[in-house]
Structures are given as structure tokens and as C-alpha cells.
Image (cartoon, rainbow, N blue to C red):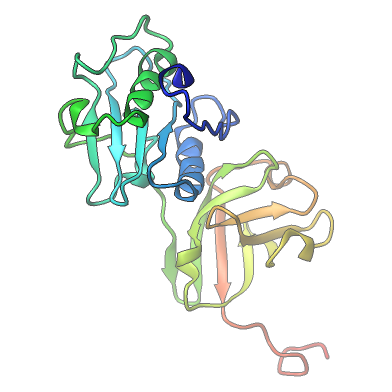
Length: 246
């Protein structure tokens, strides 16, 4: 569909690994991946449990000028910051009617993405949407001596992505981490842990992750969403200092 409309388009198939119906996991994947693409890219994303219902179809232009096309069900929550523009896909002159009720990724979103790639202005797709759907989006909580968050999603390795962003750690030093009350050693890389050890680190998506070296944190904890995470702040005691075994 895309190549037939825009033969010189470069298509990057990011993932088909989002768990079925999991909007939060899809939103987190977009948050991690979209900023690495050129601003002129058009992002087509479909996690759409409400396909064929009255849920709206939208195009989002975020404050940095990134363009995303898909369902209005919260999937684009990370990009709905102040200054974002959201257009409903409803103008009959440029938005094709879907052939059926169950495959809007093919029938609606892909043709619109192709037309945007070919130079169509987003404002021609339909009216502005003043109230796009947003997911509940947990954030980190800063308390005396610690930062608290929760796990939000698991990646294919079983690493647990949390609500704590790398930016939440600016100006602080993490000395230890607890996940579901269990010690998770704070490290810089997976290889800094021992095989099978529960770890906490900043992942490639810019969020703190809970991991098990050469294993699955999701399997280790028997859970993957809503697990409490606490990052304890302050430098660890120096070797030979008070509290040190040396």
C-alpha cells in the first residue's frame, strides 16, 4: 500500500511484538522509538481493540513536528504534550472510506500515511480534535531520600520498563534499588550483574528498567505491571569508611 503510493518511500517495520490490545505497551514503544527517526518521517501505529467502533481515527503532529497516524485510543499519549495538533481523519476528499470494519490499518491508516508522505498537509485530513484520548500515564514520585515508581510493561527479554525516567534522576545518585521489596542492584549495564541477578538500570528507551542478567525479570517476579520500584538515593559508603566491611 505505502510503496504503491510512494515508490521511493523508505519503510521501517519497527515491531509486531506489542502484546495484543496493550495500549500502554504500544505507547511506551513509540515513546522509545519515534524520537530516533527524522522529523519528516510519518509514523503509522495500530494497536486498536476498538477497530470499527465509534473511536476516532487521528493524525497527531507533536510539538517537535513529528507526525503519527492511528486510532484515537491513547496510543499517542506521549506525544500529546502542550502544542500538539490532532486532526480527525474525516475529510472525504482525502480520507478513503474503509472497506470493512476490522482492518483499518490497511484500509484507512496506511493510505492516509502514504498521502502524508507524498506531501499532503495534515490540516486537510479533517478538523482539529480538542480532546484526544489519553492513557493514565504513571509518573515517578520524589520523596525524601528516594524516588518511587511502578513497572509498566515488559519487553521481549522480560525486562520491566518503569515509570521512572532518566530525567527524574538528574542531579541525584542512586545507591540501591528495591523492586517489590527485593534488592535489585543498581548497575550501568546488564553485564555488571551476575547471571540470574536482579538488576536496575537506565534502559535504551530513557527509562529505568528492572532486569535479570541472562534471564527474565517478568518471570523472576511472576508479574510485569504495577510492581513497586524504589530507588534509594545517596552515594554508597566509601571503602574503609563508616559501615564498610573493609
